[in-house]
Length: 313
Length: 249
Image (cartoon, rainbow over all chains, first blue to last red; front, side):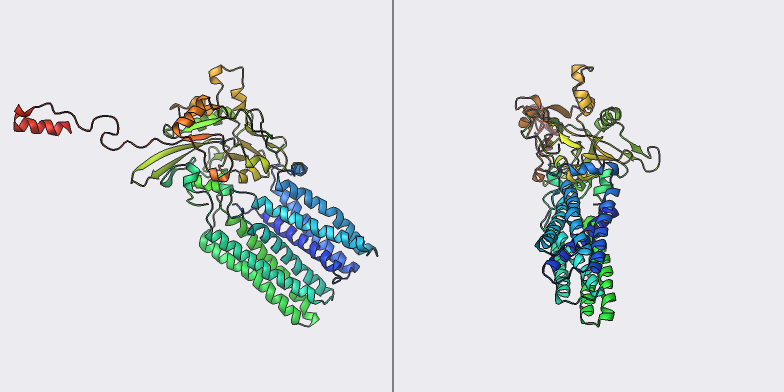
């Protein structure tokens, strides 16, 4: 599949924003993260900016961005529509929660419940994003359970790295911030490795034989056109296996190994050097996640390529 | 709108494509382009049409495959493909705006170009490559089964078939109601073992494909005798009998 940058940026940035919102709410509910105004302000600005920038970026690849509001109407059948509805719905409790956190002393159970609503809706939105891909039977690399698990894991991991950097910068020291980040990196790394093993070893359901109904060894003698058509440009994007292998290693190194080392190093360092290390973990992790998401698109093969000479999809 | 019709449409208009007959002349694709460039989905934009890298919006395409069967025989199969107007059309249910819909009265799948946002998700959901994005107009387009032709009362009755069907010089394309088991197309499908493309994708396509008939390659398989009867009896002499034997082969 063609890796469109607007969609890569949207899924990674909004994923990180929703992960940060979710963890802030959970840590606040667990009385681990004090609801102080200044870190709250920075945290909410970072999370909502990532989410909003992502959502705006996702409309850039539309043929008619001015009609984007119509996408909220078909939530009964369409995961893309559900994602739109969930993402907008999340703004309401998130706005109330952020204002309450930053500008008021409102700290009763209702405040905590509002935070939990933010966490649930955030994760619901991430799930909808994942299901846009996981519901497409035409793309074997997407229509499997490792995809929603991966989207959850990457969202929480990037959110945890952001939260760890935020709390370290503001001088909050609690074991929970480090251990959450460390556990999230391990889980995300595990899910991603299993995902790659799945797409490498389990073949898709469609073949050139099922696509054409012809029996035997099938070879494309003549394509319909002399030049590439829309389908080949959009669905036929192919990345050489050797490059995919190298990029996977790079994604693992930058996305999981380096953030783990930096986060651990920050944990055992004196406060003065801990903050830049956690900030670096966010930046390096972001590069890793962008490579991971680029591969998620570039490595995915579409069933229609079976009509254009592919032997498996 | 993007929910599929609650009840199965009684009429299922579609095509039956005979892979045994298709000669791969591309006339169906050309006439499809010709009709639809001025019809319901007009225009079918071309990009760089006279330049070095021409491409454009097409609803119908012909692939040519070379098939090597297990017995070592090779054959060329020309394979036309347009929208299959699926019963469980995933392109319809993924549409976030309701622009993509399946008609209850005849099962035809269409796009409303006035509400399409051009997100391309329907083209990702279709396993057959039936969706065509018009970059120039920013909307998705697709085969309409010539909805502006098959119901057009200004045309002669015999012309009220899709452009690809009316133009096929070999008679490889048939149009009709596949929801009616007694229709000509349904009987053709039953008689020839018509099949679905990619049944494992679960789209339940309306269009059916008729498989190429088995190749006639062996002696006697064409219906003619393997060898001619000898015309020279025993009295013909050695040379004449030898000539007769050679010529009878």
